[in-house]
Image: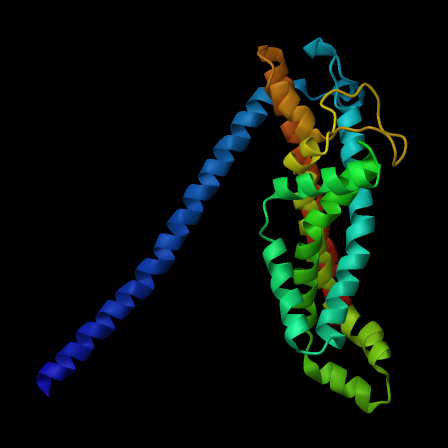
Length: 292
C-alpha cells in the first residue's frame, strides 16, 4: 500500500514537472523564432531604409540603381491582389456556405472536402503550371493581370473555403434553431443570422489568404510574369510585374546598389503585408463589437 502511494506520488510529480517544462520550452522556441525574425528585419531595415524616398516609390525601373523605382511593381501587386480577391472571395464563400449549410453528408461531399483539404497543401508552383496551361494558353489570356490574378485565385481558393467553413461551424446551433422557430427559411437564416455572426472569421481568413497571395513569386514566374516592366498596368489585359518578382530581379544582380534597392522593396512589401493583417484585425474587432 505504501509502495503504491509512493509510486502514484512520483508519477504525479513527473506530470507536474512536464506541465512546467512544456510551456517553458514552447516559450523558449517562440522567443528564438521572434529573435531570428527581428534580426532579419533589422538587417533589411539597415540595408534599405536609406533608399526609401518618394522618388523610389513613384519611380520606374532603370538600369541604373540610383534611378530605379518601384511604382510599376507596387501598382501591379495592388491590381493583382484586388482582382484575386474579386475572383476568389465570392466563389470561396459561396462554396463554403453550400458545403456547410446545404450539402448532404454523403460520399460525394466527403470526396469534395478531402480534395479541398489536399488542394490547400499543394505547392504554389503546381498552381503556376496549371495557370500556364489553362489561363495563359488554353484560354489565351496571355501574360496579363487577369491570368496572374486567376492563378492566384486558384491558389487561395481552398484556404478561403476552409476558413469560411470553420467560421460557419463556430456559429451556435441555437441561432439557426431560433430563426427556424420564427418561421424563417433556410436562406433567410443563413443570410440574416449565420453570415453576420460568422463574418469576422470569414474576413480574417480571407485577408490572411490574400496576404499569402501577395507574397507569392513562383506561380507568377511560371505563367510568364515579366521581371522588367517599364510601365504600370492600366487594365486587366496589361503585362505586369509584382513586388516579389521585382525584388528577385534586383537580388539577382551583382551590383551592391541593386541589393540596397531589393532591401527597400522588401520593406515596402512588409508594410503592405502588415497593413493587410492590421485591416483583418480591425475588421474582426469591429464586427465582433457589433454582435455584442
